[in-house]
Amino acid sequence: MVSLISCGQKQESQNVQVADEHGFIVQVGDTAPDFTAKMITGEIVKLSDLRGKVVMLQFTASWCRVCREEMPFIESDIWQQHKDNPKFMLIGIDRDEPIEKVVHFVETIGVTYPMALDPGAEIFKKYALEEAGVTRNVLIDENGKIIYTTRLYDPVEFKDFVKFIDSKVN
Image (cartoon, rainbow, N blue to C red):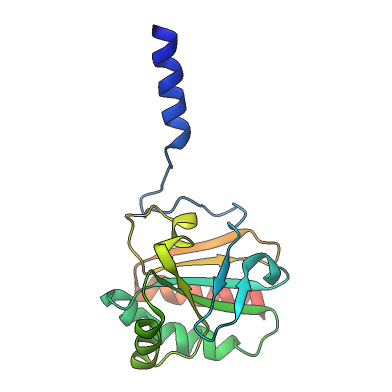
């Protein structure tokens, strides 16, 4: 009887995801989980096809107040500075909203960086606990390794994040 309980407990523990204090289930040094996403333009992007570039993933949603605060800075300080750099790619990933809402959101905020749809938060759940919030960024190096993560928007941390990106792509 004890061994059956022990086996059951072991089985359950294998399904438990370990998260950090920000809800990330990935950490710096991990290989970024691969995904395929449909962009609001209709284009299909696969993360592993972007190897050789530094890739920033920005997880967002229209209902997120902090996202709305951070996104103009991502646009001006990161996207506008590096959009023509062949060593860099930025992908916004909108959590579980229909395309019409995402397009309106992007137009309202005034961002021009590429935006992907994430039905069912399937991409999000590869990086963070399902119940964790958006307004998080993941920076991935040219070899597919996670090299920086942020959660929420803090102006001081954001400036450090921008400097780190600049150092990796310039």
